[in-house]
Length: 318
Image (cartoon, rainbow, N blue to C red; front, side, top):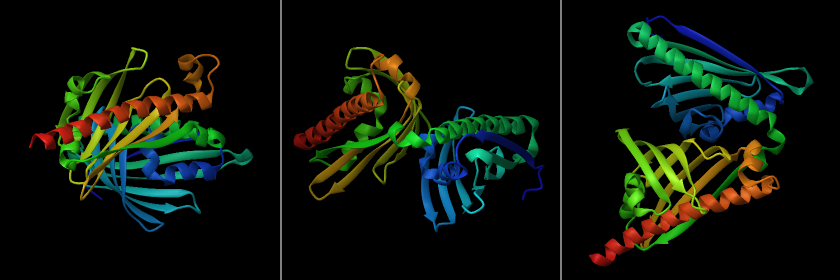
């Protein structure tokens, strides 16, 4: 531990759900981008059933941060200890614990503890880190509470699917089209506006206006993490459409000797309370699932087909 002063925080929330359900949500960190607002992407690098090493991307005070995290799970005690490795400045060290306590009547208490030090322990840097921990912990606990309390129908609220397109062309050209999202307003008909910044190589922050089938537009904001050598782009909508509580996705390329299979994956948590407002008073959860599947699939398949045209046209011109 650093010689700098250790700062500690503690946050708790009562959850009207069994402790096992709550622990299940915090134990699967790979799902956090879909379930927890600050989390953008999580890659599980190692896991032996107890100890795991994760690469994590999340927002903190409006910035995208990344670090390695070591976690030790104890399902018997419903406790998970974590420690960041190589955190980004001004954080020097960050560790903590998730604890789920069983309460009477089938409810539980969820607590998250943080211990952190800050490089130089300057007051403004300490305040920045504490605000990020405060905001993110509050958002995470609130989301976990709402999800856990709907656990009986969570499978109906979560929707995952994928679309694929086969391209007879090099994966590099397909990836280039998907990576250069800033050019999409000129290339993709359903994209009316797209503002993109990439202050950190491979991490893109974007705001996009999308035209819907009825001619209206809606605005979304996203963070994308790009893995060019693996042929993958993952993303999290930090401002999803009104019908979704959360939306994550991935573009992935599987090349072979004759071309490349391009896959668009989506995972969504539906916002149940918005269904009637968005789709009409007769709409239900089944209709909302169908609507979201068709809308997202239509747009992503259109983008995939344009990437296909881009790659195959370039090959024909050679």
